[in-house]
Image (cartoon, rainbow over all chains, first blue to last red; front, side):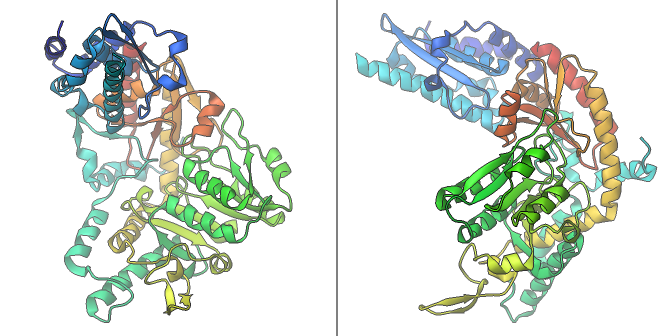
Length: 139
Length: 411
């Protein structure tokens, strides 16, 4: 599925919920279902700076597509990560580089996060894009 | 616990003095439990700032005109209030700075003059980063060595180890009066006495103590005592630095500029007398004046009443929190102010903080700028609640329900 379609799907899913408590509950559920990252990839190098909870992000390229693996010690952060993985994993580097990320604003997530956490989210997106740029150069 | 019921009766009236307390957050009534980070601001302080810019705004100390004289009088009146409040010997021992961190940097920087390689300085494990990093920078510049007073499981300093750290190389000891992360009240009277016996100067970071109980710098015989006005119902950007006159006279100025000079020529400048020597440039005039108003407000309620009421809130909240499954409270010293740090089970403090923020409850989560304490307990951080005299039992009850709800959602 194209990145923009996945993003629209996510926006629609979040629209179902009336309150932020419900949206958080959904994020927590999503967080619990994030596939485990291997211990060797939970390295210091893979830690994203600027997050108040610990976030690890690892990427691999397979058949021209980038696969992202991530984890966090906080479950809501993991929920946010799961949205990013769903959006950007299994996509080609060019599409990731060109993708716009306003779906995060559309679901109201950025406005709802503390400044620190929003900063962490920006850093996650930045790192995803950096990986895409790096892998595109490897071609 | 029995306390002065009049205080309780007045809480609703007191709360009306703080406009922010009626704010709604995410559709819920704000419950502000982050008072250790900053206290809220009463109307009289807000009005003082507005009044200054409406009626007094002018630069102090150097104008001959009426406004400048009036502003100078108000500014110096604030100094008198803090002098009286902390029982300093003279107003020249009270320096206004931009905050506690700035005050610590002012002093640590001045100690470059007194330290040489292999001299020793002592810090405690309970410190805020702002009372660690400036001194580490001092060590880098001078070759002095930093030693650490360890703490125990309850979050209390080990004074037996402290005694073994002191020797004739010890030049300065810097400890907080109250731990911002755990709420422990440290036995600074003993620390000051022992340090002085070893010939060392003592700086006490009182940022977390000054809002909760009376402090008498003369009785404590402390060399430096620092705190911030924004935790004392004042505005941000004002720090209060008490220093013994003999020390402040010995310390070199921290910043050069106007106001702090006596004579200036290109060959050499001489410095102004205390306290101006440490107040280079135009100070935060409206902030300093408003800080004095904030202090008046606190003293009108009375720190004895405040302590009694906050102790009551602390005991109530601690016992209620202990009813929550899986709760672990960090910092269980017998002497504490109204600060409680805790975690629930394996849940990340940030997750709890996010969920209860949705319910309008403001708490602190994270390492509270005190990573050595978190390392001791081997945790990423805690949830910290901290009460002020305007918090209520009802707010604690709502917090407890919210924590139970968050814990259920996140488990």
